[in-house]
Amino acid sequence: MAGFKDIISQDNQEVFLNPEEFGEVHMVAGKPMCIIIDENELTEREKKQFGRGRDGTYQKSLLFYVSEKVFGPLPAPNQILLLDGKKYLVTEANNEGGIYSISLEAGKS
Image (cartoon, rainbow, N blue to C red; front, side, top):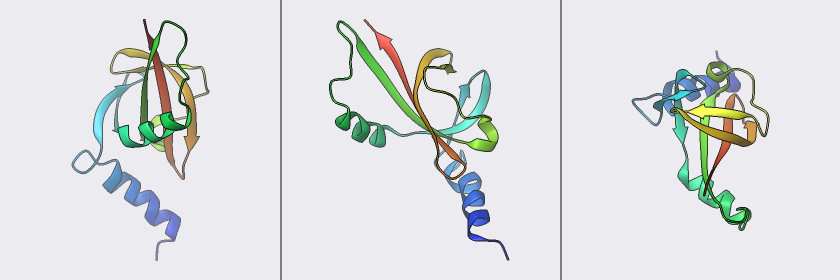
């Protein structure tokens, strides 16, 4: 019988990050990966950090979830990451039980 962690890991791959369920395939760091872009959680996080924008710029923010197994090593803050051919700066990255939560930011003037 599978343990709870094994069941969660299986659900992560077969349900949450499944393109037929919640996931979408995007080009991440030059490789196609099934990810979930979460605009609701991003909105909540931005409420807590209101006013982070820099003078004269607008910060485009993005939060996505990806499998640790698919992505590889957790990216470091301030690392550049390409998503769908656009450059973003990693502002935060966490491992949430085998799923990475990665926050990105791109400046616009």
